[in-house]
Image (cartoon, rainbow, N blue to C red):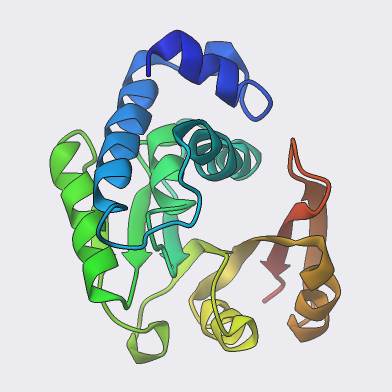
Amino acid sequence: MDNVSLREMLAPFVLPEELDETLLECVRTHLGLLLRWNERVNLTSVREPEAIVRRHFGESLFAARQLLPRDSSQSVCDLGSGAGFPGLPMKYWAPAASLTLIEAHGKKATFLREVCRALPQLAGVNVVSTRAEELTGHQAELVTLRAVEHFEDALAAALGLVAPRGRLALLIGEGQAELAISLLPAGTVSSIGLPASLQRILLTWRRQD
């Protein structure tokens, strides 16, 4: 898949001029590994390359564009990373950010490490193969959560990772928004619809303390 095709597919999510060669090379490498690994490890139920670019990379880059300046050096923690979304594309967008990927599933964590090895320019990425509840003393300025099982438990774990005055960003279905808001502590909540989707949103909560 060439850069022209990638820019066209990602255009609803990110301005084409913002998609530099380094970012596109990261997407292409990640996508190639994902397609190969997905034949033997169930990383995503989405199988078509074009659909993976739009659904996974596009949504993740859209979230990154809303949450992080390109030169951001914030600490980011992606809970339940799976195949690396939204965490890795956020790192492609903001290379100076410090990224922790939390993935308890051993084979998925191995895949994440393989992507990082294939992209030596990704300095500052830590893959943690454990459950969030077992982490001690780890907090980040931005915590992300997307498409996880046991949503209520995962949300509680994610909240515990948010640093003082930090943010939690959820990429969820619109139908989950009411439940999510009811479970969040006092803070500032905002939401925005995801491009090319009538049912998915980016919901952001900022801690007040």
